[in-house]
Length: 140
Image 1 (tube, helix red, strand yellow):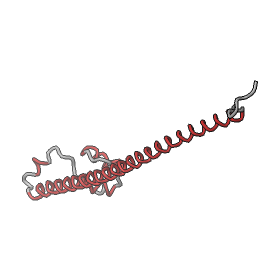
Image 2 (cartoon, one colour):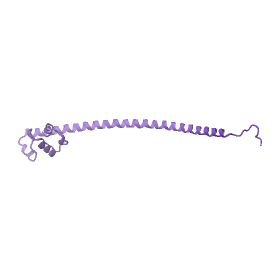
Image 3 (cartoon, one colour):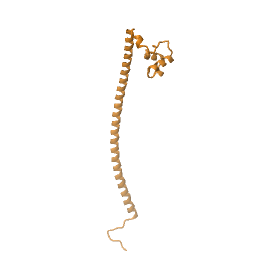
Image 4 (cartoon, helix red, strand yellow):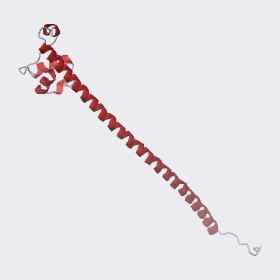
């Protein structure tokens, strides 16, 4: 049998080359899709980073406000304590009624154990970590 003129039969190497070319084209298309996906994910990551930074900023602001509020509350509490003591000191006749069930005022001669017990009775936070001078300042 003679081959038809103008038409040649594809050889094995031609078939392998065609298959490899098709595979390369498929992989190239897949690379394009993956690059697009990477770009999309990079944009999303950037967006999430910006959101995280905003949240960090908000947390810092809230933390600062909370610390300020705590400091103000502690200052008000100390002022109120001082005012109450001053009112009692200014009105000695009211003192026995006001101090009937009140604990004795701490003195510098008290031990740290006694001061801590008094602080515990008064509900002072963090008394167990305070030094003697700090305990006296809180209790007086």
